[in-house]
Length: 69
Image 1 (cartoon, rainbow, N blue to C red):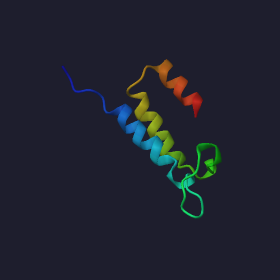
Image 2: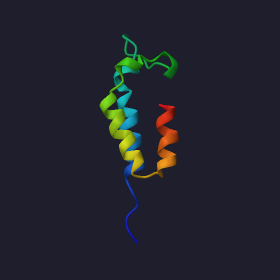
Image 3: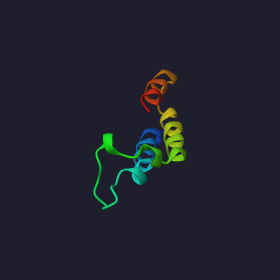
């Protein structure tokens, strides 16, 4: 039996880290998702996270997740 895929866990880390630049207010306080500056999200990290997620999901599962972003 092989080792389980780390893709989903890596995806979680990448997708969470992608939001770091846009999730804090100028005073350093955390912001709600609806108030975050999405233009400041790291698009490269989002692509990497979705790719890692794809290694652990079927094509249909990946399509559903990617449409939610």
